[in-house]
Length: 185
Image (tube, rainbow, N blue to C red; front, side, top):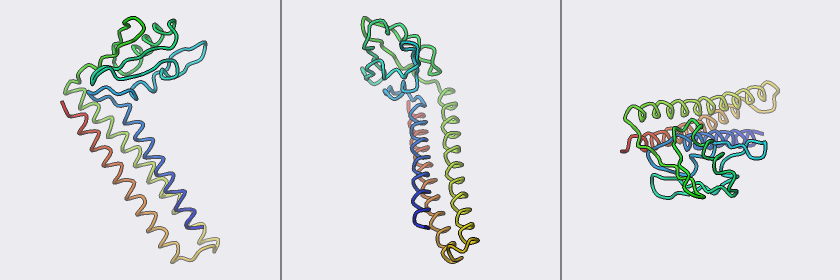
């Protein structure tokens, strides 16, 4: 029972870290990467779908993303969806391909993005701590129901605290990497 609880808690903490990684990938640095457009939605025959489901998204160079819709009639819709997104990008259609240049970040914008990154990290840490609290509560309930002893509970709480510390350290490492990436010119 205790090992099962530890395993599920660890998996949930790992999921929180994966969500943080995905959120951090959406925060724009000076460099172009295809994951930037993953959450941009475009209308496709009456339903909203991600851009990467109606077009081939590639890197043209370090500062330019190329988007090539599979259907010619989608070019203007994809271009409009990218322009209207919250990314602050200005796509330009050239024949069958849409070029999306990455404008250089200003110092003020870099600082704002750093705040966004820190907020995302804090949200992930809160999620991890909530998982720890839930696991500890389950242990207390198990002691109350006489399923485990108090010594086993204490050992399990220590193990869960170690899992929490490891997850928080990984989150801090991810944040440091992203902040360093943002402040590079």
